[in-house]
Length: 484
Image (cartoon, rainbow, N blue to C red; front, side, top):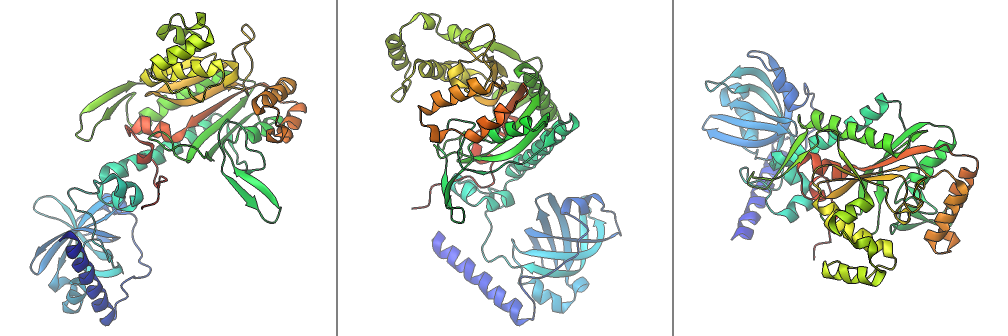
């Protein structure tokens, strides 16, 4: 029955489309000069003031010869009042062909109803776009998650909570730029297609450039090009970029994602940690108005609370491992494997001993850390681009910032010794020199200053600050499997 009903609704709208055309009205309109967004027009509203606004019809209350409608865009809604004697008989026929979902432009003057609602009394209207499909139910919006992610436009039309998330995302990105620029960082751009993918250990997407006759890869990180700019003498740089990794999809992972990377010459990982702490707290207060972030379920119940109040805790990686497995570093590798299996960890692909330790860290420390935690001095094998610690050569001077059970930001004292860097990359590549970015190593040999560097996963940061529990909720168009 639902399918029959939808078919009939589509037929009715097609007939109205034909009626508009027969009346000499272009059902898909043209230019219409507005006085701004719906929210901007509402802000300048006053009784008796002429107003022009355009938007989508999202509600219609038919009272015979008079009608109250809501005109909306992503910024808000405003009520309009249409009466036959105001618009004339010829326009009434056109008005009768309109549906919820259509775009119209209206001009009229402001008046306030008896209930105190700012309203535009319409003198004339223009059809701007005929909607040929009915919108989701006004009160329930888009409830099906498949539809929500595949047809984001419907979600944004009907769900105020989704609109709020994306407004906050825009404010967060804008705030990141402003924060760094105010501190002397220069925004730069580096290649998204690279001959050799580097800067992280991840599976890249591969393509081919016909004119150059060469394979290229979508970048997995911009790091090696940004460090070339440190060599060039740029002391403070950042890039807000899209990265691409041909790996799994989950509530925390999307094949393409937004990252901030920033580098500060002559600084170290501890200064970068201070910078990130100040930045995130500044963003939280600006966007949410608080350093205490509540995450809620669909019924509005608080499921967790994240407290960003400074200072944030900083603990060494090994100390955290000992806090959950006191005897871990006294065990041989086979006993460690057995312990991992007891903990229910998938270690089938683990070859090296440090990988076993990292699995324990992720399961027992990272996933359970809700408030901010800087994990410092990680094993050197995990971070081949970071500077070795002067006192303990088995670790590097880095932090991993964990909030809400996931890594939000890594930060390094960057390795700037080209000899050690070459050896690290050769070890990581397993001797396959074609996987090493020789151009980057050549650049380092001209001299790269000591520097601090950071990365921040913007999507995960938005999730944390807005309370979204899936990365798909903070991406306009997340990647999905094709419909079968």
